[in-house]
Image 1 (cartoon, protein in one colour):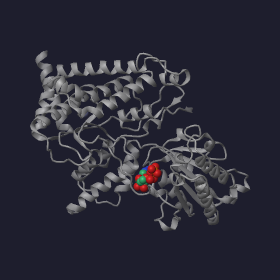
Image 2 (cartoon, rainbow, N blue to C red):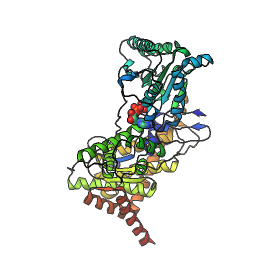
Image 3 (tube, rainbow, N blue to C red):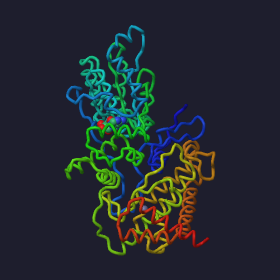
Length: 515
Ligand code: ADP
Ligand code: ZN
C-alpha cells in the first residue's frame, strides 16, 4: 500500500478534530495511517482565548533532547522491558538485537543487514526509548545525537561532526548510533537547499555506506516529519527500513500506564482503564508525564497513595493548565459563560460521542479565559459529518455570543476558535474533497496548474453556512444554553458529567414542551 503524506495543514487540522490517533483509510489503496496524527492535540480543548493564545502543551520527559554522544554505561540500562506497546517496532528491533550480538553469523549466511533504521511518528511515542533499549538489550554502546546539532552556519562544520561521531563509534566496535530529528540535516534538497546541509547529509550517507555487515553497527534515526526527508536518505543501503511509531490506542495506553504505574502507590480508587479511555491522543511521554504529575501532587499531600483526585487534577493541569483565580468583571464573566456554554451545547447536540470532561470559566494556566475540555471518541475514520460538526462546535462560542449579546458586542476571544475552524474548512476544500467537489484535490491543482480559482471563496462559503447553522441551532436551544451559562456563573467550573446533565435536562424539557 502506498503511503500518502498530506500536507501539514490537512494533517494538523484533522488531528485537531480527533485529538486522537487517527487512522483514516480514505479510499482503497490509500493509507493515511499515523500521518494524520502528526502535531497531535491531546484532548480537544476549545477555549476562549484570554491574553495569550490557547495551546495545549506536551511536556517531554526523560530520554528527550540527548546531547552529545552518550555511551550506554553512563545511563541506567534500558531494555525492551522498559517499552510498552509498539509491538511492530519491537519485533523489528528484536532481529537487530540478534545481529548486534553476533554479526558474524549474518556474514556467514551472506545476509545484508539494514544499515539504517528510520523510526518515524509523533514526538514522545518512544523512538529514543526504543533505540536505547536496543543498545541495552544487545549490550553495546549507545551514541546519541540530534540532527539539529549538526546544522551550523559554517560550511563543513556539520560534515566534520558527522565524521567525528562515526570515528568514535567505529572505535567502540559494535554499537547503536542514534540520530534524533534527522529532518534537521536531511531535509529535501529542493526545499531551501544549503551548501552546509548538503555537505552534512553527504557526509552521513558516505559514512553509512562505509559499514559492512561484519561491523555490527546499527544507525537509528528518528523523525516526526518523514515526508520532509530527502529521498536519498531512504534509498536501499541507507535508511531502508522504516518503522512507524504511532500514537497508542486504548489498550496500548493501558499497557504504558501499567508500566509506569508499577513503581507508584496507586490507591484502589484509581482505574488505569478509565485513565486510558480519557487520554485519547496522548503519547507515551504524555502518559508518563501525567502519572508523574499525579505522583508529585500525592507526594506533596503525603498520605501514602496516589488518589483518583490527583490523577484528575494532573490531567487538567497537563491538558489545560491549572485554574487561576478570575479577575474578570461581572460582565466579562457573563460573556465567557455564554461563550463556553455555546461550545458545550453544540458539542452535545452534534457530537455527543465526544464526551465533555470539563467546562470552565476560570482562566487557565495556558492563557485561556475559559475552556471546554472534550475527550473525543476513538475513531478510525473521520467523515464529512464529524468535520462539519467540529467546525460548528468551534464556531459555537462566537455564535452564542452573537445570539445572546448581538454582533456589536462580539469579543476578540474567539480568535483561536475561528483560526482552527478556518484551517479545517481549508483542509476540506483544498485536500479532502469534502466540500462540493468530491473528486478534486484543489491543492494538487494549485501545484500542478498554478492557481485553483475560487478555493478561498469555497472556504468562506462553507464557514458562513456552518456559522449560520450553528447560530440557528443555538437559537432553537437557547434555554439549554442559558441554563448551562447560569450554572457556570455559580460554580465557575463543572466536570463533564454535570455539564452534560444540565444540558440534557434542559434539552429534554424543551422537547417535552414542544411535543
Ligand atoms: P520520542 O523519541 O519518540 O520523542 P521518547 O523515546 O523520548 O519519545 O519518549 C519519552 C519518554 O516517554 C520515554 O522515556 C518513556 O518514559 C515514555 N514513553 C514513550 N513511549 C513509551 C512506551 N511505548 N512505553 C513506555 N514508555 C514510553
Ligand atoms: Zn471558544
